[in-house]
Amino acid sequence: MPRRLFVALALVSTLAIACDKAESDALPSVRLGMSPRDVRDRFEPGASGSWQTRVGVGDDTVLEWNARPAARARIVDARFEFHLGMLVAVRAHLEDPVAKDSISVTARTVTHRAPREGGVGSSVTILARDCPTHREEAEGLAARAARGR
Image 1 (cartoon, rainbow, N blue to C red):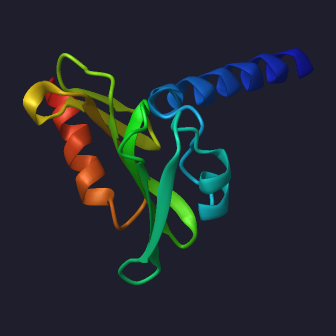
Image 2: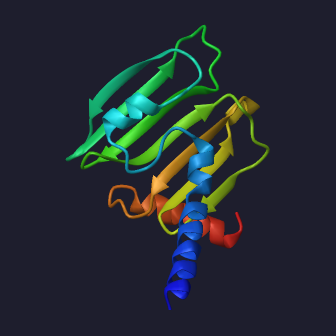
C-alpha cells in the first residue's frame, strides 16, 4: 500500500509541475501567487528599468515596470496585477517575436502569447483562473483555446 501511495503522489506532483509550465516559460522569474515584494525582488527583465506602483479598484494593486529607453531588454514593459496581495495577472511586451496567437490553459492559469501590432515583438498575458477580477477574461481565453483559436 505505501508503494501505491508513493507512485500516486509522484504522478500528482509531476502533473502539477507540468500544469504551470506555460506560465513559467513565459516569464521565468515570476509566478502567480507572489507578493508585490517578491515580484520586485525576483523579476529579471534583462536590463535596467523603472518601477511604478498604483492602487487599483478595491483591494487591487498594480506594479508596472518599463525598460529604460536605451536598454536592450528582452522584456520591454510589464504590468503585474495583484488582488488581496497576490499576483493574479501579468501583461508584458517582449522583444522576441511570435508567429501567431497561442493560448495555453491549465486548471489554474491561462497564458496568451500574441504578435504585437506592427510585427515588432510579442505580448504575453498570464491570468489566474480563480481570481474574481480576471475570471471573465481568463475564461474567455480558455474558451477560445477550446475552440482551437
